[in-house]
Length: 110
Image 1: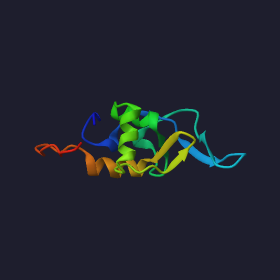
Image 2: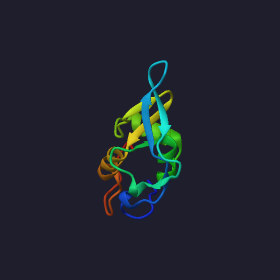
Image 3: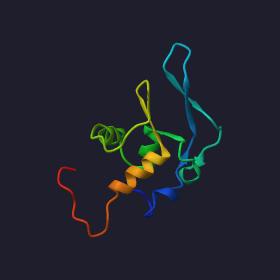
């Protein structure tokens, strides 16, 4: 994980706030709440972040994010079509549990 600085909560990556609402034919669809993006640090805990946002925050590929969800280490909140949505609170919880620590040997199988 290549997050600038030690705390993910201080990250300044611009994110459009999203909302999952019922779609006309059933299921859910994603709606942008604000026309201007906010820094990740200013989002509320229940605000939604999509896969593309996580790719920008962690400087990784979408495949890496999908692997994190497949390994069940990062739990998604919603799946809208092909898109995974995560809450900010879940991302912070996951990062706190999985962030590399100084002096910690690498875990096998990662």
